[in-house]
Image 1 (cartoon, rainbow, N blue to C red):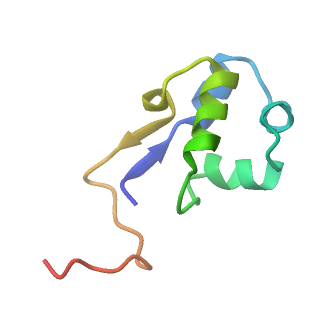
Image 2: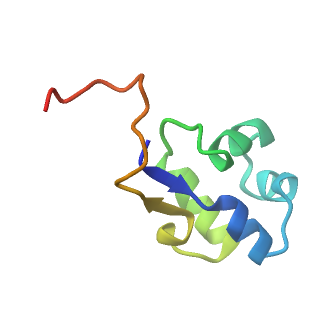
Amino acid sequence: MGIIVHLDVMLAKRKMRLGDLAEKIDISIQNLSILKTGKAKAVRFSTLTALCRALDCQPGDLLAFDPDAPDDASEPSDGG
């Protein structure tokens, strides 16, 4: 997928551990780890809001788009 997740970068900048963040925003460490590794298929706005509040950042600090990144094979093709 062309979306890059920079959660690990923000955690390092804030000197925060994944487990501490998970507890702070009330999300399982497993789900947060899936997001951190870029394996998540979707992110709720409520989760994104909680992440931005806890890390004192903007959504663009956590997510980026790379048009050259390969698409996930499980996503439907647009036929184009």
